[in-house]
Length: 88
Image 1 (cartoon, rainbow, N blue to C red):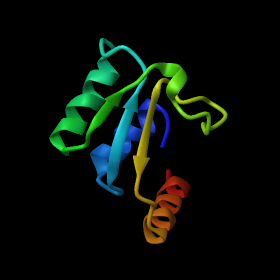
Image 2 (cartoon, one colour):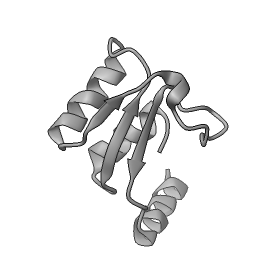
Image 3 (cartoon, rainbow, N blue to C red):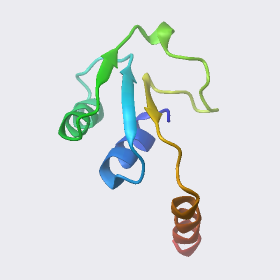
């Protein structure tokens, strides 16, 4: 996963297990502090790295200095998420 919001959502929903978070930004932003607090609450290790060390496999919007190694999303969770998105 990459980007602050997707990682925050994954930590909050517990829909998939986050194995490790790679942080390449300062910890002073509110959203980053919230992400770190959730990671600690869920026992997810956080590795602080230089932003240039973050892998280049990011999407079209970039990683915002935060990436996470996560277990794959289960197909049922994906289908349910699509149904909810269609209703909204």
